[in-house]
Length: 271
Length: 267
Image (cartoon, chains in turn yellow, orange):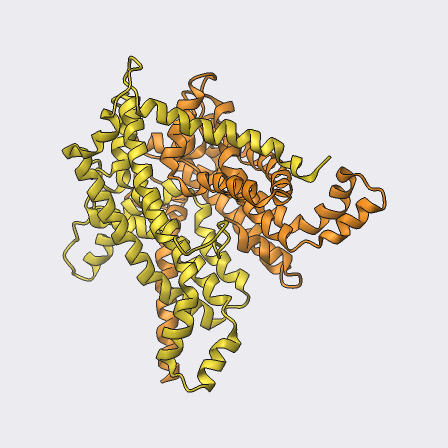
């Protein structure tokens, strides 16, 4: 038996459960209830309500990704320079929170941020006026940054940890100051990690609906919420499929942009 | 100057870690709260930990979650490991095509994967435990392949060839030569798959149909009515168990680098 036939069950699996489902969603997207061909469901993304949700999702996802980079980069540098025992321990610290159910963790944020919540309780003790962040985009942003931050810290940390110490020393020996070492050695070499992080934060931020559901109090509509409602409330599966396909294409174009010069088989320092 | 910088760095890190652990602290505290209200503290109690074990609904959801997690991770590990071995033997063109398709479930948005699978399933199977299991295996396999693949690349193939030359069949050679060398990658893949499956909400939500509930979908359904305090107790237990396992793992990995790789590649 040739070695490549070991992959036969896998090939059958991906044809059956990756390719065909994508064809199924495509078929639903391009047809009406009665099976006739239509562009309507795909183009529905341009309708005012959907377009608004899409732009809002884009803005939130960009903001969230940017904030994650700004928070994660220094954290990754510090984690590396503090040498908290072995590399494994650092990763352990960052992965551990993910083992608490993620919906419960977001609900905990709701309790922290709500009007009579923990944050305002603590602020009141210091005589500070209560904040009204619950059910606003600020709460949504906090929840998203919270949920996705580890996905940004880890790949950047991995990339920085993999930098050869000799390179940094060589730069120093050749007269580079701290800023030059960072700008010309560390930062460029950490780019692949940052790109992985961007992909791992931007895509879920752009497409999630659960966080907006909980922290937005039903008032904030991301494009994910609209698609979810088409399936679970309005029961218009064709329209939902059309919106999903539009969203998928948009995200793919964005990804292609980000990853033009990145990884060949997804192996770059993602965890 | 150096010391000030050091203190500043530690403070920053402490703040980030506080940010990451604050909600967990809230949930753990709630599991000991003797009040059904989420906002008032009614004193310390262990009763939710007791009543947890008589709550059929929660225990059923836990069972479903664990069955799905271990079942899909095991199936994905077998299919994925053999898949990775086979893919590696392919020629450049086929290799690239298969690897691109492998990345689809990872890169695609969960909501799209979930909806696509649901629209496909409703054509020929009723939605239920089976459809969720297939869905979980599907999104788990790529994680197994991506953690086994690097091990295969650094594998010394001459030993395998030598075994074949000396008369070993390909299956025998696989189990006795290849498998031991890629073991840590397979283990990492399994853990990663287990984590992804236990953590998933969106894909389960779309593929489950009525009647099946994992812990995630059950919690989501309870958001409006209010979460049962037993759920906080269960989550705290699960968290503590994982904490101990990972800590032990981390302590053991001090000597060999393999186990460290496992955690590192987890996810």
